[in-house]
Length: 184
Image 1 (cartoon, one colour):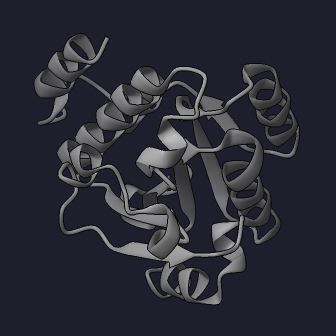
Image 2 (tube, rainbow, N blue to C red; image 1 turned 180 degrees about the horizontal axis):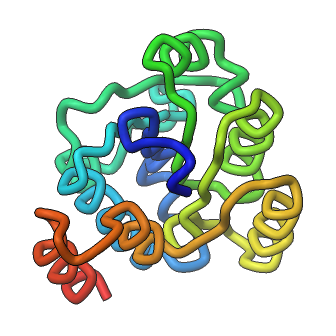
């Protein structure tokens, strides 16, 4: 994961809309773990963006999650893969993103297809395994396993955060350990 500097990484929060969150196997957990990922990203100075699946019909990002990154871009889409949307792909390329960290829903549809397309484009991909959700956990596990075989990192948010910190001298270290405890 340290192959790409933080400046070339972005946390992409996929389709965290209330209509989808409510349909997940554990809606409270997905919202809590995505909130943790967003808070960690803020403390680390990691760029963040949101996608929304057909927001005119399905509504926007959950307000509590959006509030954690209020200046992050929000990209509407009608494709399953965020990278199949030419506007989103161009925005990521313009920012010279090399490493996507993914959280959101649904693991077996939009998260899977976005990760697959990012890997095919040569980007590094890290799936925050505790911050992606599915209606059927067995489907999610199968998809995460397939993405790992394809070259994606599949790791818990806490592990990724500590990897990005590097050591205890990082200025965000103490605050991060508090985040870990409060989002346990």
